[in-house]
Image (spheres, rainbow, N blue to C red):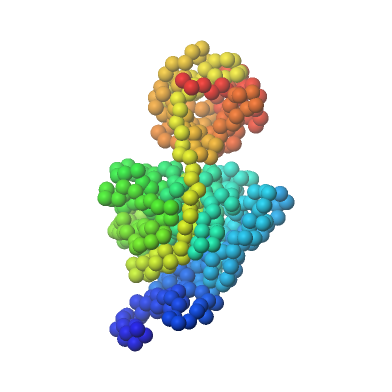
Length: 509
Ligand code: AHR
């Protein structure tokens, strides 16, 4: 077999030779030699970034909460912080180049809650991902705020996404709360401008959304929308901003800024109505001028399916990528996407199909399993709201008049469809004009039903008060909605505490 392999090697071009060598090395380590026991157990198999390097497209940043991305890596994977005493702890590997040792997390977090506060870059670039600064970073004036201090984002619950890898227990990163996001706005040695770039991540369709944006990859250094082509990230979800998509999704797309593209024109291929699995590998590569390519695969078995390869959308050539790496939000810190993350990397250069196939084989060989955490889907109900301020019903007469509590009975104008998301937030759609209620002007102006879809301004936390009433806190400015002037003026999100004007009876209509 060795002789056959060597003669095969001599006949191949250099890059393919390197790939084949990496593959043979993996096989040699994984398959015990006949008649011997595991005498080579100490040597770790190549990781995804060894394969990318062999293919001539090295990882510029690589993260995982479940395993090493290089055979030689023996550092920490991520940092957690516990609520009880705010102590922090790094979670590392069971062995160099191997899977995570999650046991220290279980004891450290026993009896309290723990948050993932940083994902460590396993490349020498040290492009670590702390919790995103959101709108509080220098120059982030165009950024959407996160729910954390000073508009920063928040970290994921460290215990919320248990899985196994190679039979060992591990945790993924769960993005189920609005504004969960990680970011490095000064990433080193990553592709910029129109330099070619490859990205992959291992995610899951167990938790997806049609909101913006569960992303991983390159984004703007100022957390702001700096225009078309200023980001190059994988988007995974079921949003179809361009219209024309087929099927329910989710799909792997390219978030290239101001659009998540499943093709140059936008929509997914009609032959692929969804890309699902409890582990889904998602792939995007972009040569910066003439081609971007999207693929997906089952993270537990099999190969990759290419869903698109071709021209960039109009207005995206050349790319203008900035040196920032983000995970969990849109480029402008749009905070509404939900998803799961287990591992992923950003490469310098446009990876070959052979390299990506070898990385996919490496992922399936890692033995991911038991991703069984389920999430309730959003629920929908038809409701009315009666203000405690004056005992009148909230009225949304049309798309040009603000909401006000001035009705004595419930008709179409006082009826709303309420979508309750699985993170404690709701969106309200007025029946009068079928438009979503927005806290206009980031909450500075009264509520009005004039939006075509729910985004951050159209999202409210639903608070349940001890007396059975509810209050609404606008996501964007975190202020409570009040029936201003005891109900005589329109509803506006400008209060910091709940009193009678901020209380409403929510009744099925
Ligand atoms: O491209 C889609 C989103 O649009 C980006 O992630 C965000 O920056 C903008 O809102």
